[in-house]
Length: 107
Image 1 (spheres, one colour):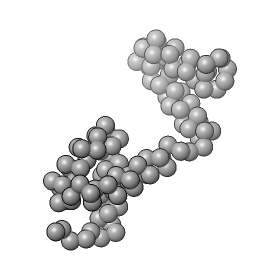
Image 2: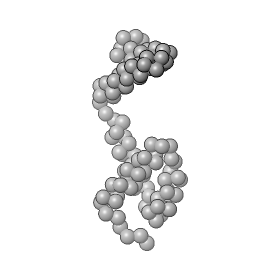
Image 3: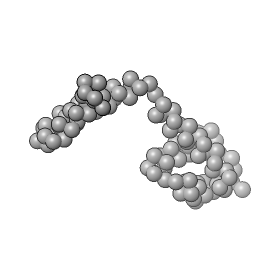
Image 4: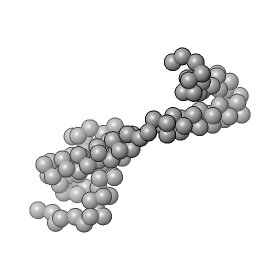
């Protein structure tokens, strides 16, 4: 039976599982990873999965204005880079999305 991990090790494990989930891993892949890397049984992996999902929810459960502002800045950067790269159709698409995010045109 593996020894208990430290608080820091637990936090690192949770963040590792967050990354696995964010990259598209399913439960069985995470469970196999935890068994292989940390010697955890299936049942012992579930609390890590639960905590990792809570982290993911906290990350995306933010104020709508913050998310909209970040997306608008991203679209402005896409427009600027697209024009620089002479990818005008990409610039037009990003401009349309920016206008929708800003409420200037119907969604």
